[in-house]
Image 1: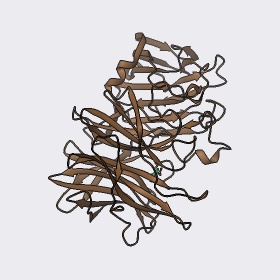
Image 2 (image 1 turned 90 degrees about the horizontal axis):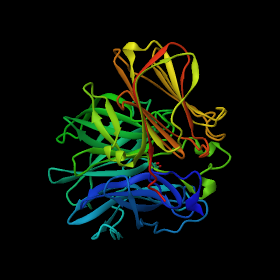
Image 3 (image 1 turned 30 degrees about the horizontal axis):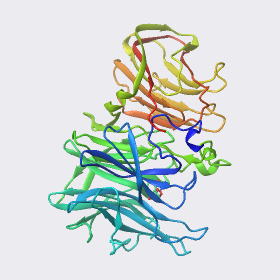
Image 4 (image 1 turned 90 degrees about the vertical axis):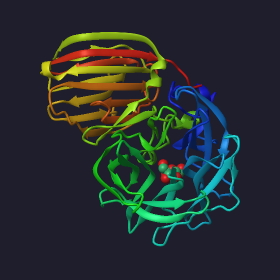
Length: 474
Ligand code: FRU
C-alpha cells in the first residue's frame, strides 16, 4: 500500500498520501499546534491545490484532520489552480484563514486574496464576499500571493509576495476587520540580486528587531533568505542591514513562522523545492510511491548578538530518542576515510569538535552509505577554507548536486554539528544552528552505514552522541 512506501519518512510530518508543498496557516490555537498545508490529495505531484490540516500537542505526534479547503472552481486539463498558500489568525471568536485564490480562465493564473473561517477550528466556510483583495496597479495578476497576517495594537496587518518591474516585493496591507484591506507600504523590495518574486513572505518581531523571511524566485541558489532590521508602524518602513540564509540546502523552502504558548518563534518549512524537480525524467522515487514531500523538523528562530539568526530544532524532538551512543574526548588521528559510526537510517547525531586541539583542515561525515560506500552522502566541513558542502551526487542514483555555503568560524573554539537523518532527508545544522543545509536523499533503507572521514591531521572530538529516533508517521 502507499503508506508502506520504502521512502516514506519515519518522523517528519507528511500526509498519508499525495503531494504536499508549503506549510500554511500555522497557529497555536486553543492549546494545540495546527498546521495546514498545500495539498494535492489525488497523486504525488503538484495539482488542484487544497489545504490539508493536522494538529499536534507536541510538534512531534500529528493527528490528521479533514481537508480544510478545496478549490471551488473547475479547471480544465491545462490550467489548474486552487487554494494557494496563506496564513491563519484568531478573530471574532473564530479561526480565520487568509489564502490566495488562484483561478485561470485560459489566459494565465489570476491571484487574489480570500478568506475562510471556522467556529470549531476544523470545518471551514469560504467568505461569500471573496476575494477581499486584488493585485494593485503594476503588479502582474499571476504574481500576487501568499498573505501572512498578524495583529498589532488592535489592527490586522498582512504582507503579500508581489513583483513589480521584474523585482520582487513584499507589500504591506492593514485592516480593522480582516475583510477590508488597505495598502500601507512597500515593506521591502529586491535589490536586484534577490529575484523577481518573493514567495511566502513572513514578517515578525524578534527581540527588538524585525525579521523578513522570503523564498525568492529567480535568485539562483538563494532560496530562503532572511533580512533583519528595524520597522515602524507609523511609516510602514522596514530598514534592514543584516541578511542571511535560513537554510542553504536544496530542500528547505517557503517556511512559515508563528508564536506558540511558550512564546517561542517557530518556523516550519517545506522539505522540498521546485528547482530540481522538473529537470528529472520523472518526479522521483517518492512520486512512484504515490506521494511527494514532507516538512522539515520544526525550528526555533533565535537572534545572535551580531543580528544573524539561528534555526534550532525544537527540544520536543528529544522525546523521539531511542538507543543512545556516546563518545567523549576522542582524538581521531587522520589519514582515514572510513571510521565507522553508529548504523541507522533514522537517527540524530550531535557532535562537538574542539578546534584548539584540532589540526585537521577538514573532515567529512559520510551518511546513509552502503557497505563499500559506492552510495554515500558526503557532508564536508572545510575548517581552514571556511566552507561547508552537502554532496548528494552519489546518494541514491537519483538526486544530484552539491549545496555549498561559507562557514563563519572566527576564533578557535567549539564547532558544533547537529544532524537529523530520516528515510529520505538529511538536515545538517552547523555553527550553533547558523549554517544549515537540508536536502532530500532517497537512499534505500539498507543504506544504513555511517562513517567519519579525516583525510589528514587530527580531529579532537569533545563529544559525539547518536540516537536512533522513533517512528511517528504512518
Ligand atoms: C510556494 C508556492 C506559493 C504558492 C504555492 C502554490 O512554494 O509557489 O507561492 O502559493 O506554492 O502551491
